[in-house]
Length: 253
Image (tube, rainbow, N blue to C red; front, side, top):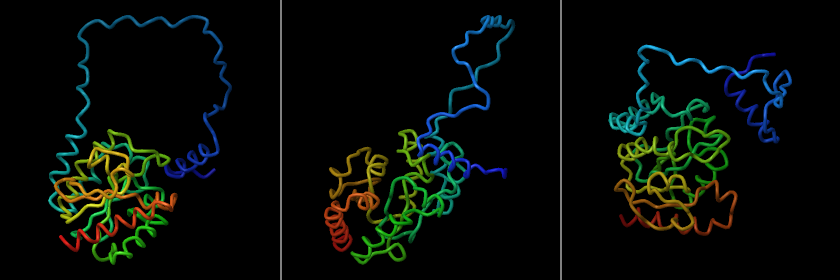
């Protein structure tokens, strides 16, 4: 049998989970009811000087802050993020998803977590979600090829597209904040709950959407994620109102 690489094996496992597999079966049967004939004796305590215990776990947020702060350009920030080895998500991702669009554009859009298609392409907002976003932007005479810059709050896909964990959001937050500072947008658009959780420390997008606020000292508009609009077309009415609000803020500001 031809050997599989990590990603092929991960996709095969994900497929089996989707089919309903809940446990793995060994090559040989195991009697889990068998009582061992004798219990193993506890090892005697070692005499003499004991080895030093390892120091406490490093503060990963502090490490991320130092790595992000050292970047003086978007290119350096991308390199710093690529070199940051403390986030386990990178181990299961095909590629790092950093950005797309026009750096320095007046509008910076932050999505949530890369999905399967973004992970494969190495770019945010591709596939059907990207097509929906492009139609939304075109409706107010905007586009990623002219005046919009795109990124996500996490650069790596989560296993089986699960929700990001609080420690993962906290670890990547310094990179997101530095990304905004280097991109220098006039306004931010936060798509979905997790981008709001990262920068506003709030969730419930249907309550937050449409209300202008501040994030990292930049005017910010939470909006429903385009992927949610694909699942719930009824929310397009609110999304259109938010797009008009974005257009007016850029025109008046």
